[in-house]
Image (tube, rainbow, N blue to C red; front, top):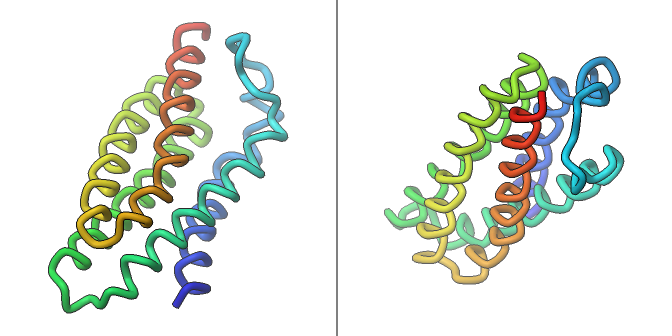
Length: 151
């Protein structure tokens, strides 16, 4: 179950990268960026780590048993935030739209926060494992906003 949970999370990253990777050199690298924008090579390892932590968190919730109503609710929120995460990659990179990306990432942040809250009802450790993700998405929201303003 742990391997399945991690693979599902990492698969979300792979799906998002289908929109991201081909657009880095032809679009993203050409944008005006804020001073705190990390180099492009930083994003891959950070996201891989975050997806791993998300997968472990989902496993900790899932292993409590899907007969529990709180587990089912938590996993629904988890899947929704993964889907919104993929949609952000399309909106920002695929559509070349920092504004669309900003709208989606705001929703993503809310879904992550909700996921943390419902995970906490099932597994406090699972909720804590999602904290680096929401911190990074908070930073990514700032970057997304800055890219919209600067471009």
